[in-house]
Image (cartoon, rainbow, N blue to C red; front, side, top):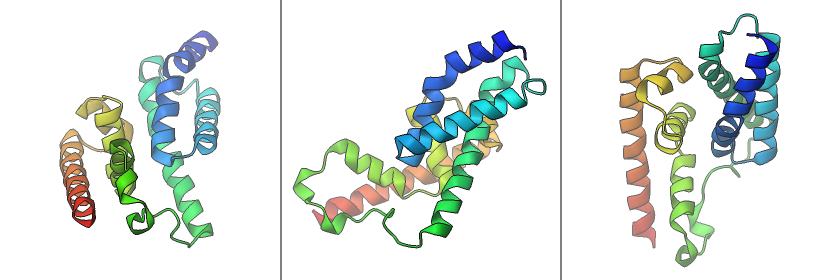
Length: 161
């Protein structure tokens, strides 16, 4: 990949990559750091990455960086402040978006990534599988399980209201 192709890749995918990171990490500053790291790694590896596969390479790299980031964060912070707690929330002020975001936040990282890529970013099963380095059929299975967990969570939270 040459300098022009690198610049085109960054311009074309910066918003989607940033959106993926923000939705996954729920923190804009952390997402900025991840995206910056991905672009730096892309520059360092530009001779190894094919221009046509750069998008997939960047999302895969971002996914792994976010998993590593969350693992490090959990090691440093054993407190359960990142877990959703609906018992202390005013149940009458829930917005639909907040409820869905809370339901997505309880998912394991792989299922969360699949929901974000597939349902929110609109990637195909094949593209999602390539980004996460799993098969297309695994994407479908994890997506099914993730949606079921979200449905169960939404039903449970409705019964608490």
